[in-house]
Each structure stands twice: as C-alpha cells, then as structure tokens.
Amino acid sequence: EDEHILAIHKPEGVPFHSDDNEVGIVQKVRKGLQTETLFPIHRLDKITSGLMIFAKTEAANKDLSVQLANKTLEKYYLAVSAKKPLKKQGLVSGDMEKGRRGSYLLKRDKNNPAKTRFFAQALKTQVKEQYIDASNNAWLYILKPETGKTHQLRVALKSLASPVFGDRRYGPDEADRGYLHAYK
Image 1 (spheres, rainbow, N blue to C red):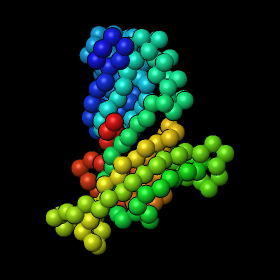
Image 2 (image 1 turned 90 degrees about the vertical axis):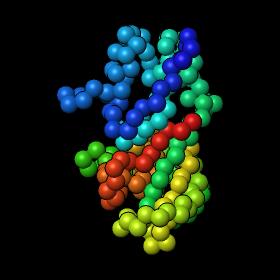
Image 3 (image 1 turned 45 degrees about the horizontal axis):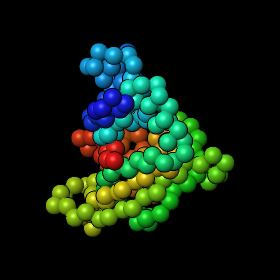
Image 4 (image 1 turned 135 degrees about the vertical axis):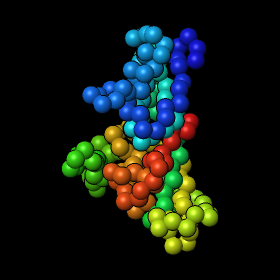
C-alpha cells in the first residue's frame, strides 16, 4: 500500500460483488479500511485467488485504467488443469458469447475477441486421482490475458480441452477449490 494504490491477496471463494448471501471483496476491503474511496482496477471471479489492485484516489484510478486500456499494465495468472492441453503454448482468440446459466462460449468470430496467451508445462504428481490424465500429469499454465472479458481465462482453458482444475462451471473435475490464481 502507498498513497495511490492498495494491493491485496483475494482468497478463492470470495465473490467480487456483495449479494444477499455473501459480502464481496470490495465491500470487505472498504469496511476493513473504513473508507468508501477505493476503486477496484480489475475483477477476479469467485473461484480465483490472488492479487487485486485498488486505486485509492480518482487520479490513480484514471491513470491505472488508462494503462489497462493501452495494455501497458500486464497481468499474469497461474492455473492448474488435470487434462493435457491440445497444445502447450499459443494464443486463444475469439469472440465470447453468453451461454446458459451464466457460462460463456468461445466463438470462431473475431469482431471483439478475447485474447489469452498461454504456456503449459506438465507437472508430475504422486496423486493417483481419477481426475489426473493417464500419464499421471497435472498441467501448470502461465496465462497472460491481453483483454479483460468475463470468465476469459476459464473459457480459454476449456477451449484447449484442459479446463481449470476444480472449475465446476467449465470443467467436470471436483476439487477442494478452483485452481486459478492472479499471480502478477
């Protein structure tokens, strides 16, 4: 934290916005700091843990928002999947369309595409789970979103036939959590 920004670690399972059932991360942070003057710079899905940045002033909010829009502020995420990807590195790009029950679909059209760069590496595991692929590997991803669409990273990994481990919306795997983390 400094006079312009606040960086926090958001736990997984905490929603961005408050609803009737849960207090969201923005409200929790505002309450903890006893201030309403706090601007979230980006959002994280409920299943996503990790780094969240808040601007503490309108000027900082404007500056950081311009950096995001101009792509001079980069974001990196880590994810784990139990399934081998169709390819180990590249770019997932395509328009996203809202589907059933709040899920999104990746389309082949590229009028306003979601773009995600990715790199995958096999992780040997001692876990003999039904969810880990036949080679007994899990897969670690480094993800760099070049756009900021709702569920973009989760949909990108699903399109590679390698959904985020524990993502009940986009994958079949049961786990103690969704393994998607805002890293840097």
